[in-house]
Amino acid sequence: MGRPSGAKLCVLLLVALALCPAAGCGDAVDTGAAHRFVLPAAFAGAGPLVVWDAVRAAGDWEEGEVAEVVAARMGAEDAPVVLSEGRWASCKALSRRWLAWEQTGIRKDGLPTACVYDLDTGLRAWVDRSSSGGMAPRVSGSTLVWLRGGGSRWDLMSRRLPDGEEKALVSHRWPMLSPAVAGPWVVWTDRRRGAEDSDIYGYNLDTGEERAICTAPGSQQGADVSGPWVVWTDYRRSAGQAEIYENADIYGYNLDTGEERLICDAPGSQGSPAVSGSWVVWDDYRRSPSGGDIYDDADIYGYDLRTGEERAVCRDPGTQRNPLLPSD
Image (cartoon, rainbow, N blue to C red; front, side):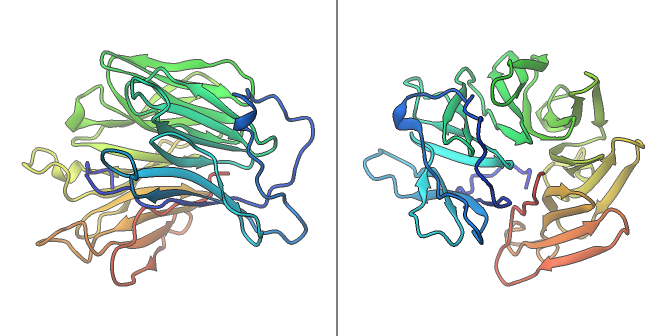
């Protein structure tokens, strides 16, 4: 959900298409011989590469848990490879060639670092170490975006991998959160109207256009983008109420036509939408519309933007959350 929560880190599983080694792709910035990681090689009949966040006990750490970014190839006998280092890492960005993640425990000042990993060469590079806020790196194709800053200055950054120059797409004094990128469009949660009235904005990498996608009453957050469609978690039904993070719905916006579409306003809340092609998926709490913990008993639902069909993907007992779809 876009709702602020103290929930523990959930295991994230991302599956990419099987990758074939490519020659002449050694342009990533190496940070030393120890930072070259050899993943199980692709072979005839090999399964896809799988990347996940491995959470374990803190060990000698004074508090909390340790999370590492781990990769393996389905069907291979090689042991999984730990790609991250430091105190905590979480990967939510995977394209055919690139991984990107945020981690802490590298800098002495405790600030986060954004990292990328080149699946073709096995080289890992530090992209940015200058942010005091969450960096949330995301990648689509060879376009990397991330956040830099905190306090009174925030920058939405981009870089063409492997060796393009860094560029600040949008800079202002209001926090920006949760960027997503696909094709020419970057979208994010923007707090220029305040933390309780966040909006969805977009930026076109080809034209330099910045666009307000949704500035409805209440809070909008957690946007994703694929093709012309942007989707997000929308709290406009809670605007002006004591609990502003209840009654979340899923909305969408077509960047080509300007159409805003209500995708789901079922009882309870819906959140964490992801979009790929014509399909939108989200976690759905209609089984817990009121009473008790309204964030238990989540299911996964989907919606076809072409036909308007809603479909229950999983309604098993317990809680299903944070669905993902391939980004490219």
